[in-house]
Image (tube, rainbow, N blue to C red; front, top):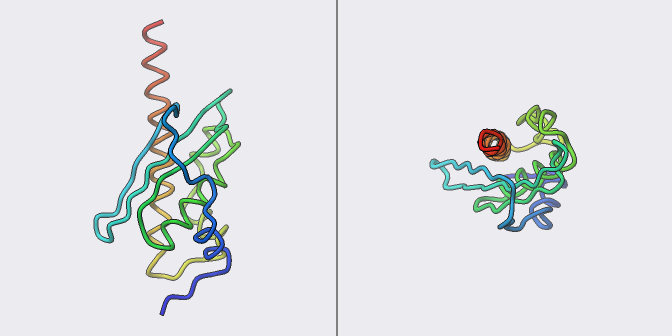
Length: 130
């Protein structure tokens, strides 16, 4: 039997920022083929800060909760500060994860970092064409 913290259950039952963002400035996806989890993070950036963040996730309770918490931790942060968010930050913010679910925290971090890198790639390409 897997025991989750109240914070994990809260983010699983009422995930925050869970929606598609068709007009996002950038997106990043991550998945864990071993367990079938998949996550796409969408960001909208203004003045080098994440003004809006959303995601679509397919996965277990821990994947949904870690995706939700990743979005909460990243929203409003500068891109540089958002890149500093770690798996440990997410686990700590959720008051821990069962040992066999710790890998789920990598999903959020990986997709967030890919979204930010996608934003940097897009903006550098736009600058080259100006």
